[in-house]
Image 1 (cartoon, helix red, strand yellow):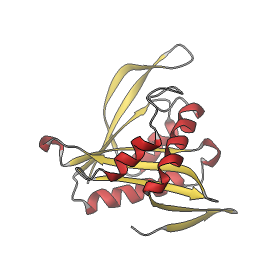
Image 2: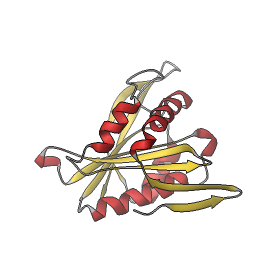
Image 3: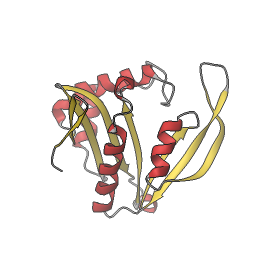
Image 4: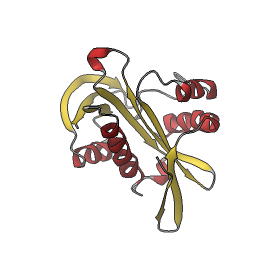
Length: 176
């Protein structure tokens, strides 16, 4: 996949496949994203992935896997991942997730990442992309619906957020 350059207003960024040299920046980005909103499964400091963990994932070729990063001014501001499954009964599909720094929301970055991942999954002959999203993340849900994802189910009262309330996890899928 080639590097794509995009502009939004005066902000210029590029989307490209992650490289081993991105491992440290990916680890830092993931921790920052976890601290910015409650849209991720993890609270800050939970299930921390180190640069070594990311490097190991980037080296692992046992299943279809793609990590894309968005870079602006030498700094990672977003990433997306589509990961296949080891088990043969699930080898036809991949799980998807993405994160964009809150300061960069509304610039079409999530859309660009999602469209590239859908194209990648089709090129891998995958038949489905699945994801989970908390019901309060309405922007992400709208993005997925616009790209053909459908709600496939809900895990009721699945997440306890800082307001002391439980929220559903929405299960979504896209048939390719």
